[in-house]
Length: 205
Image (cartoon, rainbow, N blue to C red):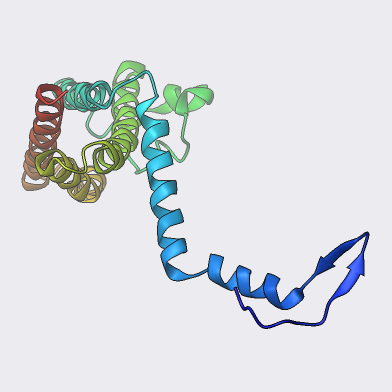
């Protein structure tokens, strides 16, 4: 604090030195104090997350399970010939929920089961994408000292945009074999990354 005396004024028996107050404010806003406050906030975030009853390995395991179900549902959709039952992308017949418009189902060359399988596959894939983002963020917060957990989850997230693009091309390019095969290959890589994330997080619990 600046020891130099400054003009004062009396209010309710208290002497206020504006210069001293400004000097104190400048000290509190110094770079070391800001960095220290940042570390405290980061510690508070990690502490809050650590108090959540669901552990990270549970989240990683759930993400792995949902991603696996997406792959199974995709295989089922292909097996029943429903890969193009939603002819546009990302919507289905120009709407997000085609079952709210019965005339769409009635006029489609595909059955309601086929349309539902493709529609459910897309919806579950979107859910899996959100879970992968959360799993990656959680890895960097809760396992920041475990590189294999962080980077395997990050690899899954990095592959996610490519998988989304391939999913769209699968429909718009009328199930071209090379695109369908690549789409499956990237899905397997994402599944392996998530499996690595889960197993290492589980073993290090």
